[in-house]
Image (cartoon, rainbow over all chains, first blue to last red; front, side):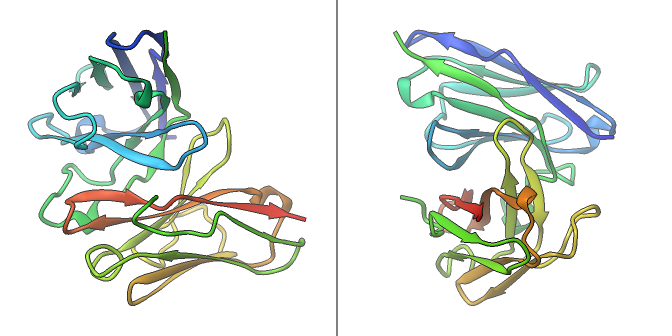
Length: 127
Length: 110
C-alpha cells in the first residue's frame, strides 16, 4: 500500500525557516517524481514544487522560487522541502504527492498529475 | 481568482446525480488533460479522474469525467453521504508552464 506521511510543520515567524519531510513507503520511491502542493486556509490548491525520481531536476512555482528548495533522499525514501524567508502568505497545509512516472515533464505537462497524496502538515507563518 | 473556474458549491439528495463544471481556456483545458481530485478534511486527497475520463482502480464508476473544448465536468451518479467533500479540477497550462488547480467545489448531500 502506498503511504506518504508528512512531518515538520509548525509555527514560525516571518522571515524564518522550516524543513518539511515526507516519508514514503509501499512503492519504489526512486521510480517516481514527487511534488509538494499546498492549501492556504479557506483557499484552493496550489502546486509548489516538483522533483524528478533521480533528484536531478527540480521545478518551482514563481511564488516560492529562490526561497524554497526541494530535494530527496532515495536511500531513505524521503522527500524534503526546505523553506526559507517564510512569509504570512506561505501559511498553508503542505501535501506531498506522488507522480505516476519518473519525471515531471515540462514539455509534455499534460502528463503531470498526482496519483497518491499524504495527509498534509500545517505550516503557520505568524509573529 | 483561479484560472480554472469551478462553482463554489453544489448539492443533491442521496441517489441524485450531481455535476461539477470546470471552465478554462485554450492554453489549459483546451489543449491538455483534465484531472479531478477529492479532498476530505483531515484525510489525504484522492485522485478521482485522470486524463479527462479515466478512473484509477478503486474509484467507483459512480464518478465520471468528461471534457469538451475549454470546459470539463465531473459527474457523481447515485450521490451518497460519503461523497460530501471538496472537489478540485486540474490541468497543465501551456502558457504558464504550471499545473493549475480550480478553486474547488464543495458538494453537500442534503
